[in-house]
Image 1 (tube, rainbow, N blue to C red):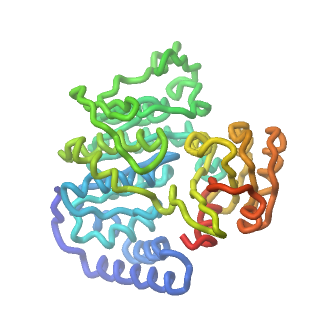
Image 2: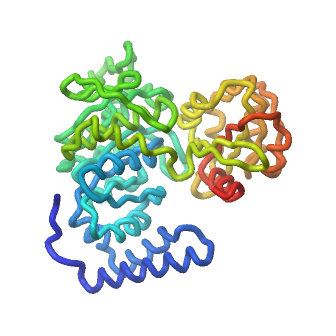
Length: 412
C-alpha cells in the first residue's frame, strides 16, 4: 500500500469540510446526494485535493462506455478481502464526484474509482493508480463525449508512460489500441457483442477482418492480442489455465464479463480468483439496476440502457414474450441531447412483447418503434403505462435520467 507522506494540510482539511457541508445542504434540500456540488466546492478551495486524498491509497480506475459502475462495485467487493475500500459507488464519475468519494476514505486501503471516459487521463495523472481497467468503447452521447476513435486516442495518449497495470478487454479493438501504448497490460478475453463501432482499424483506418473470435487488419497487422484471462461460459480461466466458477446474482453475459475483468484486477493485488469471485456473489443490484420493485400492485424489474451497445445487452436479459415491457427515454444533459442513437438500436428484438412507451422523448422512440414494425402504446406517466399492460412482471428499460425518474416514482 502507498503510504501518505504527510497529513492533509490545513487548506485541504478546510476544503474537505466545506465540501461535506455543501453536500449536506444539497441533500437536505432534496437536490440529490450532494456528491458533485460537494466535490466542486472542495476543489475550488484546493485544486490539488484529489491527488492529496488519493496519496495513501492503492487506486483502481475503471472506465468504459458500459459496465463501469457494476465493475467498480464488483472490484470493490473483491478487494475488501484485503482491506477497507473507498469507492464512488453511486456513479458520480467526474473529478468533483470522485473527490467527494475519496474525502470519506481516510481509513481505507484501496480506492476503487469509476471514471467517465473523457476524464480518465486527467484523473490518472492526479491519483497515480496502481491498476486501470478498460472494458469497452462504443458510441454514447456523441454531442458530449465525441467519436469513439477520438476517445480511444485520448486514452492512448494519456496512458502512454503510465506505471499502472492496465487490465484491458482484448476483444475490443478500440480498447486494445488505446491500451497498447502502456508497458504493463493484462489482457482479458471478455468478449464484444456490439461491433458496429469497431469495423475499421483504429491504428491505420483499414478494414478489420474478424476471423473466428479475433480481429486483424490486413493493411497494418494490428490484431487481437493473446489473453491471459479468459471468460469461458460460466467460468473464468486464470493465467495458469485454472477454471474458476462465476456465480452472480446479477444477470446476463455482460456481467460475467465484468466479473472476469474484476477477478483479473483483484489478482494484481494478490486476491485469489476463488476469493474474489465468491465475494462478488453478494452484489444483487447496483445503484438500483436489476432491482425488482413493487408498484401499483405489479412487479417491475429496473434495467438501465444508455446507448446502442447497452440496449443490445439488455435485450438479452429480459424474460421472453409475452412479458410486458416499458421503455423510457429522456434526452437531458446527463443523457446527451442527441437521440439519433435510437436508430442504431435493433428494437425488432422486442417483437412479441406488449410495449408501453414513456419519457421526455417518448415520441422520438415511438417513431423508431413504428418503423421497426412493433405494436406499442404511448403514455404520459408510468402509472398510465402499467395500467395499459397485461398481467405479469414488467421489464422496465430506461436510459440514465429516465431511470432516475422511474426510481423516484417507485420509491427505490
